Amino acid sequence: MNKQAFTFLTLFSLILVLSIYYIMLPSNETENVTTVESTIMELQEELDQKRDEIIAQNNAIIAEETSTTEAINEALETISETKSLSEKEKDIVSMILELGYEEAYVEIDNKIIKVTIKKTDASSSDASNVIKEILNLMGNDYQVEVKFISE
Image (cartoon, rainbow, N blue to C red; front, side, top):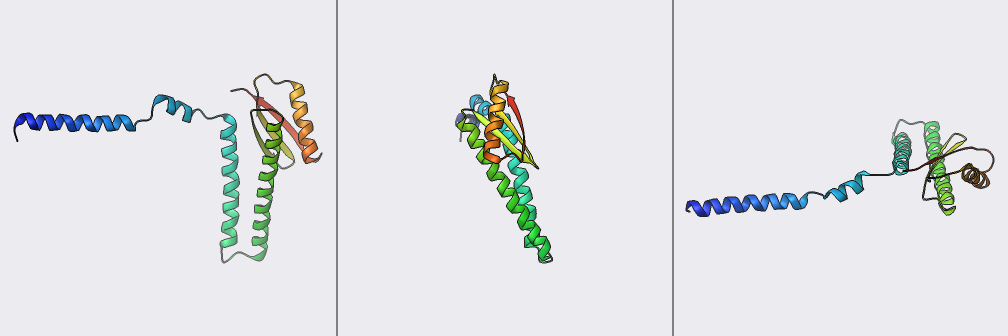
């Protein structure tokens, strides 16, 4: 093979590799969209991860051969409570979204319901309306904390 053909094939393959590499790179717009994740979504993901870990730990207790009946019953109860809390939180989020808010995050910790709502110019009447609706849904056994954020 002569030098010209060899040089041509070398340069052609280099250009081909570089073009494939360039095509495979994500564009800046796509990268910005995926990295800008809302605070509420991050909070929800953290809570979901925490709940999944609790369920996994209790499933491990149930699966162990050396677990006592009492330990298995406690693990089953914990799993049931965790799933119940998740359902209650989802119900509250749905109710808040029905009230017209864009995004909402709810965490129930003991008897405290922590609510974070995305709204730029929130007022105290917004907070009292949300608290009233949550107490109507959940009963007066809970204390409600409402926080508004604007992103």
